[in-house]
Length: 81
Image (cartoon, rainbow, N blue to C red):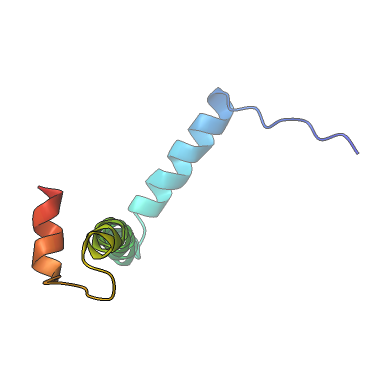
């Protein structure tokens, strides 16, 4: 089975723009905008937690073996800056 690649040309662009235009003028546009904003908020939250996860273990390893020292979330955030 040979699959042909999808062509992104003017017709595809016009169809996309038309679909977005219909969606933005529909009755559910505010609900969709809210969900889209939540999607971005969750993405930034997960990204921030990944940054903290990367910083906290490196500070744990620098402490004495078996002790975590004075490790706080505030100290981890301060290390970002």
